[in-house]
Length: 426
Image 1 (spheres, rainbow, N blue to C red):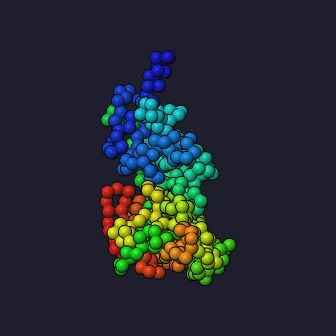
Image 2 (cartoon, rainbow, N blue to C red):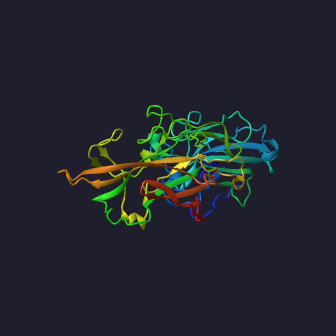
Image 3 (cartoon, rainbow, N blue to C red):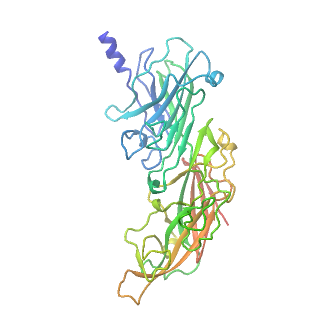
């Protein structure tokens, strides 16, 4: 018995191949080994993105999003498709898989074993990052369907609050249906995770014209605030209007900006989705300067001390990122009504509107304080282009500021891969 126990412990070892390969190797020779898991996300660099590497972080680390959760469905001799309306996650339910850096293996407990009867099948669904409080979503905003609910598991997902945008979650999912043990697979199940959200980032530049005087010291443009326009933001800051220059600015009554929605049947479901009335501030994710400037005779609604993102004449050649390196907005896609992402429409123009507040500033040469500037305030609202905001696609918008106007100068669209489409917005 002790010998068998030792062999059983050995069978828990899970080996993950290099993250640049979409395959997993197993050296286990046993005919009925433990169920093992390997993962692949298609990306190899650490950052906010959910990758093979970031998934290796400890799920118990409050500052990181590590591990993944597994739902397992034992279906006997039947395929999952034939019994999906009745079968429940009785084999595994929100089972945490965690990477052991000492053994370079994915582990979980208690260990599960393959059925002894030939032809018996197990289907698996997985998500990341792992949420230990699967019914409250305390850490990640992820809540999952109950263990007693039949069929494909679903996820209720909520975006991070405005003051936690640097901790936004990149929700990924995977499935492996009708799995059986074979000598070829050695009992190992591989998960190829896919991104469920849209990833967005922004750069900005000065438009055509002579801006040589904007040297970053005597004069420059300062982007200070950014927000997603709500569907009914009222006419006061208290009611949710984030404009600093025009409290009568129109709401986006047709907004499709979802702060909460349901991942169901392998696509997004908007039946009980939440679209906020108030404008949604993006200030917390902006790459603002640490020092900032002091505005001479600040106008009503503006503070005397201002921090922003500086645009100089150099930005005409090299656009400036509005977010810190490897920081993105991860937003719930629009028009995602089919599991086949190629059948989904994305957004209509105007579904998502984003406001920007920026200052054209010049050093106040009448002041003895060299940190004081005279500011001319301006705002602009842009609409994301039609067909954007699709699942598993990344968008880089380059905003061009022409005097008091902002327009989208370029929009680069790509999946979380090396595939890129360039879209020019006139």
